[in-house]
Amino acid sequence: METVLVTGGAGYIGSHTVKELIKEGASVVVLDNLTTGHRDAVSSQYFYEGDIADTALVEQIIKEHQIQSVIHFAAKSLVSESLAKPELYFYENTVKSFVFLQAAIKAGIKHLVFSSTAAVYGIPKNIPIPEESMLDPINPYGASKRMIEEYLEWMGKVHGIGWVALRYFNAAGASLDGSMGEDHDPESHLVPLVLKTALGLQGKLSLFGTDYATPDGTCIRDYVHVIDLANAHILALHALEKGLPSKIFNVGTGNGASVKKIINESETITGRIIPLEHKERREGDPHSLVADNTEIKAVLGWEPRYSDIETILSSAWRWHSSHPDGYRCLLHF
Ligand SMILES: NC(=O)c1ccc[n+]([C@@H]2O[C@H](COP(=O)([O-])OP(=O)(O)OC[C@H]3O[C@@H](n4cnc5c(N)ncnc54)[C@H](O)[C@@H]3O)[C@@H](O)[C@H]2O)c1
Image: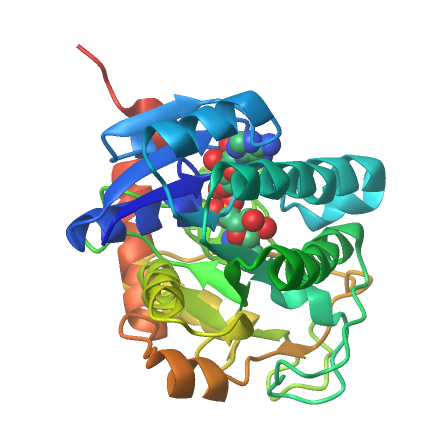
């Protein structure tokens, strides 16, 4: 594999993808402004601290490293923040991606894999959700990503670049040896919140709604292990290099797990009781979000290998229990 530029490669999913790319023998260049990422999470030889909207830097990196392939993770992804500050999300995600892609195409890239999200669907009518479902995002975060998908469609048609947009469901888990994992501040994802509660790093775990139309009354989500997610990007890049026409894929296991199931299994894995605080439903939380993954399996040959709940939780527990302060507790001599 040739040299790959990874934007957002210091973030949670990006850093795991960089590691898997390096295992595949790729040379990797990371561009990240470290707003939510961590320098210590980056395992590539080349790292540029900078913004995706810095067109001079983007063009310089692409030319200097003769880059043809890009994986574009860099974005803001807090749904609640996007509802409070829509202008920030359309600027940081949509506008900056527009600017970045224009510069990257000008500098000569040929292929791009883009981090989209199940949030583009909004509240789905059918579960599991196929890619051709109606797109009706219910927050600016999802809307900001949908606009990038549309932009890619036209940039691909007009400028001839091949692209894949991967609509992730819930990324979770950590590297199997526990050396890398999720470290967001604030944290909004269920698995790290449950495990941080188990470690006594925060008070009770908020449980939002127990009266949903699901078997145990709590919301169901499709958790996909971050290594399986990373591998979906690599398969997508390989397919683009072989001439796959531009395409959108869901990335999820097709199996949902309820919030209660995650809590119960976490108690078993950690051997600790997770204290709960029952709260009202949050506005806009669909009761179930589960991917129809027929397409990605059929076209890219993707198969989840680590996305069973036991592996997700035990790998995440290894990371959180050995790094209670995330990347901040790494010592430098
Ligand atoms: N985590 C999930 O469950 C999930 C689900 C669906 C989609 N996504 C998408 O996947 C991508 C990665 O998510 P994550 O959880 O790893 O997030 P993250 O915040 O850990 O990583 C994002 C990275 O991008 C960097 N970044 C942000 N804006 C930048 C800019 N303008 N220029 C350069 N670098 C910038 C950040 O510093 C960070 O390292 C995002 O695009 C997110 O929207 C994530």
